[in-house]
Length: 141
Image 1 (cartoon, rainbow, N blue to C red):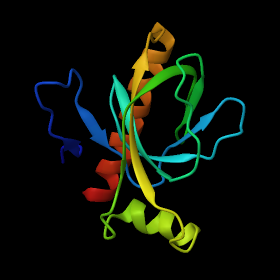
Image 2 (cartoon, rainbow, N blue to C red):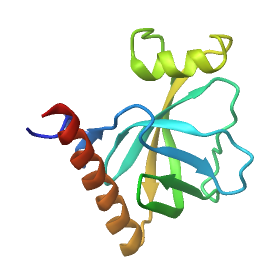
Image 3 (cartoon, one colour):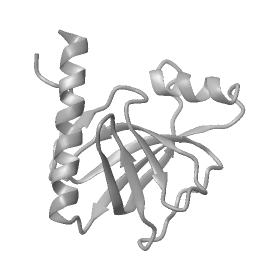
């Protein structure tokens, strides 16, 4: 079975792959930020959900880490491309995040673009995508 993808439009350079809720996390290097739950991933960036009020870095000099099951991608530079309130109460990630704080905070979906990836970071992101597709295919077959 083919991996689940999100349709690309003319603005996108890379196909985005949907991520099973909770499969991947993103953290700020200085550990002062709460994790977001990644919902899609591509070679050019990612989308994630977070609670409103969690302060995500807006500066390009901030560094991030993405965690998968067997690999992490370190020292990533990213910049936000979108940050919007998410109101689909039936979405699995919405339900998961709402249950963590009893629905007290609004849930937001943020898009981030990778900046200046090293060859190692590019390979590691490709491995994360492959790792996810393998797990996703096993669960949907």
